[in-house]
Length: 419
Image (cartoon, rainbow, N blue to C red; front, side, top):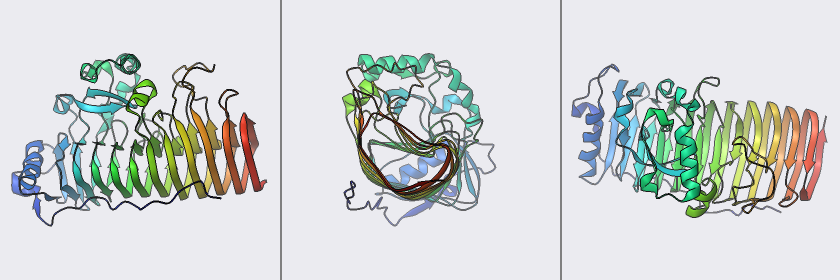
């Protein structure tokens, strides 16, 4: 019996049939002159007339961050490259955003929208975030740790301002917040400073046929596509080769995530190909608002650390439930083919039971072929909060170790072969 409940699939953005080219607004090609004002003026011109499409022709176009308005589509020609500025001051003043699931004010994302409806990013061109100018900040933890504490202590969000390099809080490439009717279809996103494509608290979302390429070794935390607290969304066709998880579903971190309490729900993910990543398809670890009613199907993970990954930690709270996987192919993963763990301790979390233990339940996997994994199936519940109703069927896998299972209630494995 399926644990996933079908829903009406999203329709995405509706954009008026009106268009302008950035060449109408005084742009200079070549990647040397910043065209920030030209992009702003093109968007403002259309917004004043009810919206439309901003066309970006072939060529290299340097710009600071691009801020969307409602009813705006940004469309890239196949040989167009929007190259984002490496000057940090171009991303100030600080804007309202989330960093690893905690609300704050920091550098603007390179493609940024808040409280908009009907917005789209389309075409076959490339967004180049030039993230190598930001990646060194990953080792700077002062601001990040301060932000985590601010979230736990419920410091007013307006006082959580992290707008200097010395604090180490990086922006993402695309971050849309509290938006309705969103389409992201076609482009390549590369060299992201942080998480790459990151709709947050958005509804009626389509992400289709995008490519994410960030250097596997040198690009920390450059997740390919993260949906955070989104509702009614379709991810259909993502190719990733990146420095963190390929596709990930999230819903806020710890006390701040529980306070906001917006789940990621009614999501379909399909046709994901991950060349290299940490997790192929991941839920968490920031999932304090909950993740529920998700279907993942017809995906291929080629050379990852982990294939299917659900990760959380004892203080997260929240519930991951009614998640169904169908027809997943894993070629070679170094660690786990399937990893469902309550013990994700990258932040030095303690393993003892505490007040906000998360729940993971009703996880069904039907049709899994894994050519090789260090451990094929790793199920890691806690005595005080066991995994519940985990079902695996039609599984053909090979690994150094077949299973490592503890604290699971209602485990079913049918037509399962380890060879």
